[in-house]
Image (cartoon, rainbow, N blue to C red; front, side, top):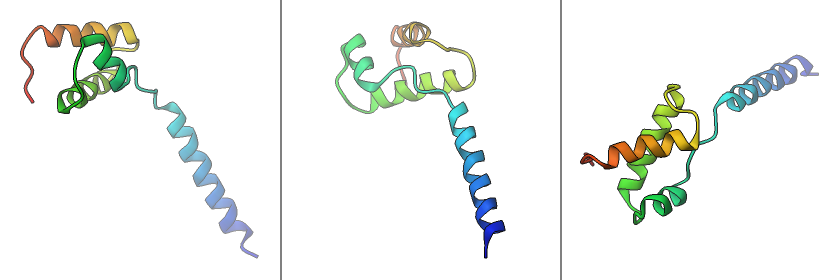
Length: 81
């Protein structure tokens, strides 16, 4: 019947799955961040998570330790919200 269409759809799904598998998992969770830096939940935590995620995806950091060091340096100076 529509074997060709089904096959193409399966190939697209497989391609998307393999691309998604290439995206690394976040280095830190919000909970870990709050515990390590003694922060309350709020926009600041989200901003910090966004910073480390950007650094991770651009290849500047790749470990939890690097992420914590990166954030420690940023927390020693005022952050813009």
